[in-house]
Amino acid sequence: MLVFSFSIEKWLLLGVFTTLFLASCKGNGPTESEIRMVQKTIVAVTENGDKLTDFSVYAGSLEDKSCSGEELAAEITREANTTLTVCIQADGHKPTARVISFDTDGTVTVTLAKQDDDGNGGETITRTYEIRADGADTLVAGDLYRSDTGEVLNDGSASGEITLPRTDQGIELCTEPQFFAESCDIVIPTDTDRAIVIRADRKAAAVRVDVVDETGDAVENPEITVEDRGNTYTYKAGESTHHFPARAGTRLVRAGKDGYEPDAETITAGADVEVTLTLVRKEELPACSDNDDNDGDGVADENDGGCVDLDGNYDPEDDNEKLEGFQRIMSFSGAEETFFVSGAKDKRERIFIRPFQKLPSSIQIAVSISVQFEKKVSADQSGEEAAIKVKAGPSSDNLNNVNLSEIIPDKGKESWVDVEVTSITKKFFKTGTSYEFYFVHASKIRGESPTNGQDDFVYFVPGRDAKVSITWFYEPEEVNSQAKDRQLQTRQFEVASPINDITYNVREEPIGEQELYRR
Image 1 (tube, rainbow, N blue to C red):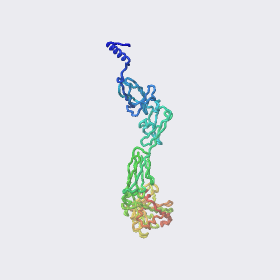
Image 2: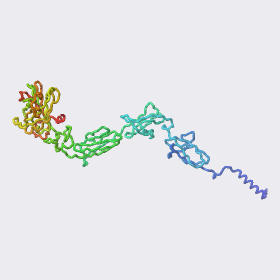
Image 3: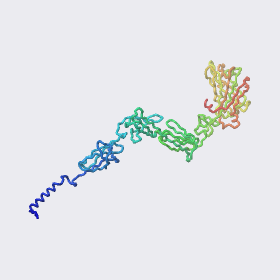
Image 4: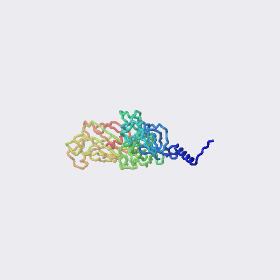
């Protein structure tokens, strides 16, 4: 039997060597509890510093910016003192690669540049543009923007320069100026031969007008007008809504109807408008005090000859402004002697007209009477003046009302001149309409002594056609029906004059009131 025998000293020495051997077999690195980890949080922002909430992080490299590697979280934890290349991507922005050093915990901010319009980071091109109103071809200010991205390329200008990606693909540019509808055009940035002109269509502004009376009931067939920059549009019968071009400023809407006070309202010209105008019934006033030219003769009320009473005074209660007129024209030729009056003895008065029948009774209510004829003026004489004496009455043998007109002055040169005598009034015929007209020389009227006759007032001469007219206007409502019927008759005939057997051609006819105001 083999027996090993060791001393206590030997056993102790063996233990020391064993411990040293085992220690030499272990590695030199730190223990797991000694490894340090670092966390980095990635934040993406725009070039303006605005945070992006929707972005992605991928493992990548500085050479490859397509972000095609493994997707990572925005918070990345790695061993301290290591590095990692990541690629950050967000819609509308260029992918960006970044090397991250994991030295200490913290935040890494990565700025993403805006992606070029072609999506590929390509070159750009500058183009000029104009925004014009379609039809009018005037420049219109408005934003110009891309329809696909909404990017505003130029803010509020009618023309200018814009930057577009250099591409052969069409890009739709749009604009919507104030008062215009959205209008677009597709342009190719590289097509520099074509001008960029966006034509905008002006919007329409609907103007609806309701017209009511003071009780709120609709007024039938009112006249509606809209005044728009110097132009006036009148709504058609039954039309309540009309479309006008939308624009800045205002329009004036009016409504009216006979028998109502008109109403008006100012409205905006830039938007649809509904307006209600209220017409108030006018107080029923007589025609001669309602401030209206009811008979269309150009004058009204106190200025209208049809608004006088039988005494010739203005009558505001008269309900008819209309006047009617009548004219008797007598023409003849073949006088065998000269008819005249002068200041010479026995030549101072002579018959002018000895009529064949009465004048119509409407002359007794006439508001205006005139007698027209011609007289001869001699340059070598003076004082050729006379007046018309009117003898009138109920019958030719009872001319009991005698009156004189104003003296007709000596005016003019060597010639025949037209004369109109307007100083004869209805009072001349108050006792009847049978009449005779005489000429009386002015020297006799003034009570002067007879003259040598070198002042003759000549009104007919042999070989010259002559014409005398008597015209008057009257209010038809003042005439009884029988007389009025006669007034409306037009007649033309011949009659023998008791003066030297001269034949008169006579025409009688009604005439319009406008002839009175034409004089």
